[in-house]
Length: 259
Image (cartoon, rainbow, N blue to C red):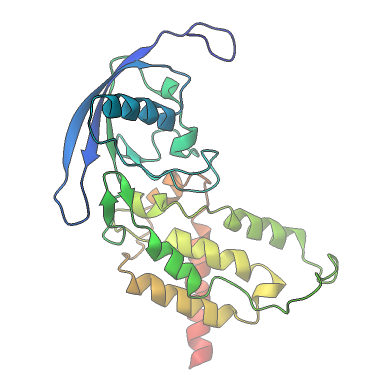
């Protein structure tokens, strides 16, 4: 088979060790599958599609895994690949990971996110509703509805815009939680808070938003941040850890004002 560059690439034979679990109440286990005809040009999810086709043809239950856009935008493809959140390639979601990152004969371990706040639904699919509830607790601004405001009505310095956009790049995949030894959601929550805290529109509700979202994060059972840094290293959008520092500073400020 040939790739986009016209070069002929031989198919690979891989061994997959996949976590199978019927539901959140049933104990799971690793199951071995052979993938004998994998193109190096396939994405990781396309490889799983082919494996599932063979399982269905053989009368077996296909492997359940989450996906949607397959363009690195939605954050749905939440998989641990050989112990790495989203796989070994930095700054890449699983749907953008290609099989040329692996070698013929490799054994690949595929598991779901491992965090108490992300219960397994089935196989590789976990419930990440806890992240949605953190955002629902305050990740928004109150603005009047009606006609859109003039684009230049509220001048925003470019540095502030850049910082807000960098934080807003978070796709809510949960890789930061899965990679953190403490299962902390501080990078996720910090990115959502920093995004709005960097803009004028986010200032009126800044203190209330900070306290509400951090309280919800704690209520969901996420662990504490101890500045290990795995969260930022695993983040497919490479969001820096300084959003956590910003969150902590805002918590201190909001606490002082409340007193």
